Amino acid sequence: MANLLTTLPDATQGEIFEEILARPGARIERIVSHGQSTPIDAPYCQDHDEWVLLLAGGAGLSIEGEEEITLKPGDHMLIPAGKRHRVTWTTADEPTVWLAVHFGKGG
Amino acid sequence: MANLLTTLPDATQGEIFEEILARPGARIERIVSHGQSTPIDAPYCQDHDEWVLLLAGGAGLSIEGEEEITLKPGDHMLIPAGKRHRVTWTTADEPTVWLAVHFGKGG
Image (cartoon, rainbow over all chains, first blue to last red; front, side, top):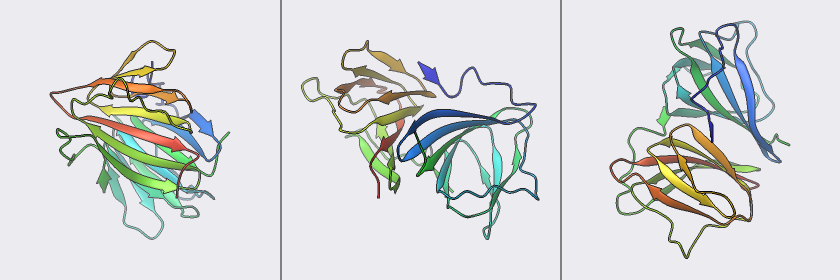
């Protein structure tokens, strides 16, 4: 049985992105962070909607034109296509685990 | 900030299905169970692939042609299109929270 929360990879040297499943229409990804943040001069910006759910740890997320928010386990939100966004912090003392669903992408 | 694990609806009288987000290509749903199971003579069977992730609680899942499995938080699996499947049990002493991604469906 595959589990998203056990046997986590060591992400202390860099965030780890893993594809869980891809189908026409959407792609599911797990991201493990460990203290990283997105450089202020290199925000993410995608051409598709992305839904994120925080599974473990904690993080800050800043989306263009909105107030910075804090994510705890269970928190989720849509990052609309074309919106610049940055992870402002992730917990340094434990892994942060994200689930991301990328719409309009897939296998 | 929306959260999938806090302020859970009372599912003791029946499972509660809530759409979280729908986009062309996929639909994301939260299911809260509280002791329910799928009747043995009325298994689920969908015409699309469904990916499930257990977020809280515990459950048994039986998929046609496979051994019954036990799901704990973080466990996830694909239920292929056309495969009959049943939830054989969910925890009676606490809510069980599922995340389901239905591929090939959406808004």
